[in-house]
Length: 296
Image (cartoon, rainbow, N blue to C red; front, side, top):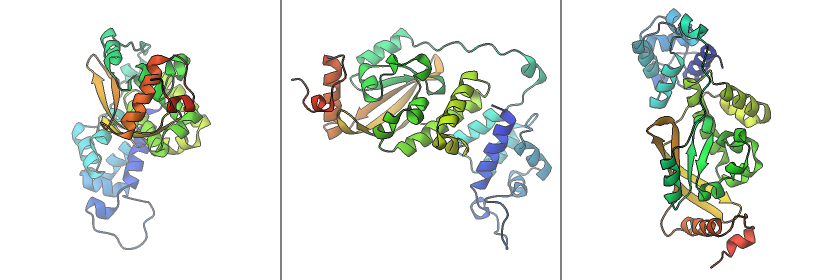
């Protein structure tokens, strides 16, 4: 992934979202040739020259100051996640950094203490790593989504599951929203690790096989989720509404633990209990009829 083109497209798409009225500018008479703000309007709002902003939007970010990036972020009404993404993308690259050979990224390992935490949880839990890789899960986490442990290592990835596995289309009630969130999370990671070869492979594969992914990737949206709600239609136990919280691992900021919980005494809690019963009593996946009549 080319960092210069990423900066260019990110700024262009953010600029297109904001009208002069939203930016606090007086509306101009007559038709506008571009959606959203013009480049000169962004420059005016940020307090920089038009030429300077044009160079930045063309990806020429070497030497740009934090003050300028902050001013541009305010002019474009970026939220905290988008602002951090802009800073990640605009980091100047020195000649030495360009010529220095990149060392291979070491595989991520889940610490034994985290495995013990997974086993101790009575609700679904999944450990995610770089590129939304699934590093581990407790049995109920695998039963809720997919048995990632049985798949080849390269396929243990939520993005591949969401866009390339037909089961995801029926599992996620709000599949389009899940797809948007998945792409936005990958975009955020890409801003920090544009030179990750496994990310490049993943983006290429998803772009080749999914029209929806290509469309969403072109939006350049970024988003970080630490809490939220997932609505699922599980093939064995039916509809589930689960709240989730994502906790970062202190020793590895690119590793996180996602925990899914139902509202107490709700139909979702009952359905999750049925799924947990089957998960703990049999290694084979139950049929939908078996799931509706769990062992006593």
